[in-house]
Length: 181
Image (tube, rainbow, N blue to C red; front, top):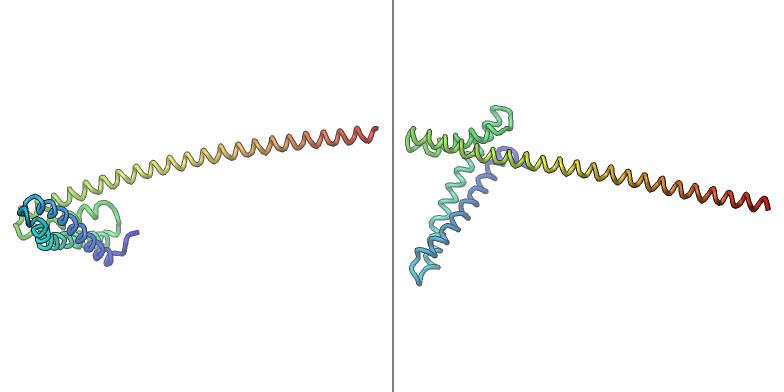
């Protein structure tokens, strides 16, 4: 379940910070182990983690909050929740973040942001369709199994009824025979 827009911005900013922090932490551990002086690798790695990870996490948080802000704004303006909103939000976010580099870089970053989010949305849509298809197949299988079970149950009930009818007719026949004697 997705949070309403003001809360969504804060949640996405926090999530993006955590992703950026952890991702840069993993990268810094690899760099520290590879490039650190032989006897000071642990200290070098720790210094890299303290210096770079919070900055990278903050950059991710800025990207996440801008993206969510644009996504919420576009949803409010357009009054729809579809795939166009995140793609446009990705393009706007990329363009705004690259605005200090000039128009050319800003347009390139906007195009890259829109294309990148578009690829993510296409993949998400494809996975959603696949999961929906699997769910429909499972439901169809469940319906078929249920019908087969119901038919088998009815068949067993008919067999029991026939058996009971046969027993009762034999019993009645025996009683009639006994009465005649």
